Length: 438
Ligand SMILES: [Zn+2]
Image: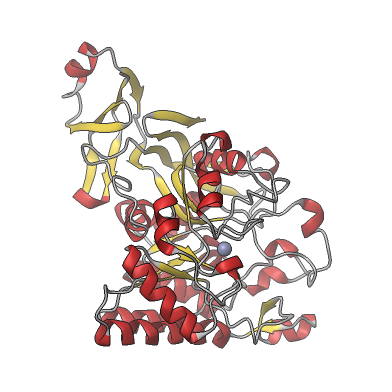
């Protein structure tokens, strides 16, 4: 039995609205007790606890990223479960959901179990999202019951969205029966063929084919319509649609209306979509090439507003590692995606807390409590007694300079390399084990 006392810190726990100095006692993999400063010291001493001094630091539930590409099986040169989870621990994360677009695609219990095997040497807890359709081909839904039994926490075809109405209808029902969200990367890929950035004047000038706003909002609106039909007319369990990385004001407005109508629709925003616009593509910068693409200033501002007013439920990175030689191609040929798990907390502090005065309690809700709740990760996203001892200690005031070459991630395709950012992660504890210390 191992006991840890974290003392002297400022504790933030969104579910209990705790936002004040509190000490925290951990035993083995669980949280035991929270107490006023100094109150737990006697008990900790009796148990021979390891004492961690958190003076000047925020002590919060470990961050949860529900949209990460770990590239295993199949593309270990970009990332492995071991390297990706090590980078995540450095970013303050204690749990993540990994996407199924691996090779082979995670559409079977065998692949799900392979990802969860201790041989993958994950540093933090990994929760696989399984493919919504066989091979992510969009035609036949996978076996949700057996995939869930193997450990899948949701279903998505990610970069290959489910386009056929009938298949999406079936997927929403099957996911609801399994008690998990149906997760959609909203893009009408029929109208984005060959497109590599946001549609508009800049794409025209750069001579690149653009992705229209409607390619995203059209699928979001279609999915919401299906959810509404199933919710009002259906006999089965209530479907839960989760929209991945929303990038347009138009799609966000559709989600806002769906929520007002009482539908179970949730969504995430990626840090790059609230930090950057398509201006970053100038010079054909492949580190600004991602899908959905960086949009206009109006869209970027709408993502911030949605995070502030609660329309956006959580922050997720879409951490998408690619090797240097893959990104060092001409813009249209380079793969989509940037890494993000190392900088998510700092970028969120910079934009939301510093620039828009979002309280840290609310930020921790968006980065830990809400994502854990959306994916049904019980005992996470909270520091309540008996929860898993997933804890992050960080200094929101001091700054650091991100050097992508020093990241444990195998890739360094990020537009934020070399930037000095606020918010330094000092320690990450995953189920009672210290998995990162700076
Ligand atoms: Zn993705």
